Length: 164
Image 1: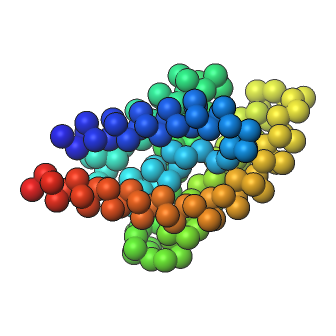
Image 2: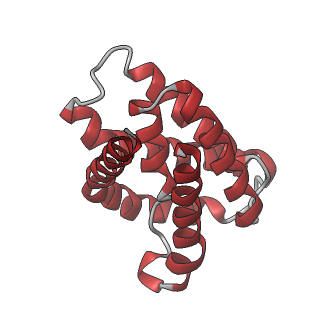
């Protein structure tokens, strides 16, 4: 049952990001909204639940994005690994983690994107686009990131309560 819920959440987030947000001009430089979900999985869910969902999310977005295959999967795996590592030092409920986890995830994703574009297309103008949109992404992540994490936590608490 929980994996069906994961599938619904992933599909809703992917459709929102690739269809709805791509069509609205204000959201064209918004951060990847699967980042808070991946961070939530890394902080609050078990490895057995989280890793298959992270891989599925990455493969799905890689197939739909048109970017180099493996770009999102690599980003999500590293983000998940970092979240699993950080809860060895901090409690996942720590307010510092909730505030800065999504911002750190956006920075990590943009660093991975920049490094991949630097390797694959050294003369590309993609660097300037990524760097120009980074400020807007960071502000958006700082404002909305903790709310996304708390929303996912609340949804999963409801789901677990329904499960029994």
